[in-house]
Image (cartoon, rainbow, N blue to C red; front, side, top):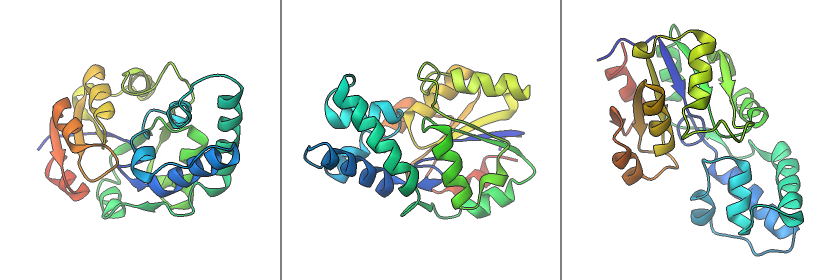
Length: 214
């Protein structure tokens, strides 16, 4: 076990199963602009690197009038439907309660306003001191930039900090930031990518954090 004071959690695929709402929003967007809908598997493979990248990969283009229209349609729809089907993964509340005396933040590539809405709707926003969202395209995971900003803001001791996430992006960002990393295997990210990124810890159940963090 490691003594940890500061836990940085990813959101989608780690604490919240938001896949269905994201897929529905993308397919609504595609249909709205006259394109064919995609499978949940294909759209899920685009999740994790921010809304612009999600829409760009779904369209096959990452700039231009069609991209701008699609992004606008997506954000308007998602603002009203981002928590229609989203649920907490098993044991999230128990784990957050167990670590209620630890300092905790969210670091997500999702835009901050959407992350906050989901956290509030699911009733867990008050567990976190801050939400670092993917609003700055130049400061997103796998870059350590969002973690570096958090470390500096809260004057964290890197030796007593850990990031917990379901994607290799989280692990790579944590390694670059110089903190401990924990990959979870039950989320949206692919298990093989997590393994390849070589996190310090890897768990199949969020409850296993209790065996890692003291």
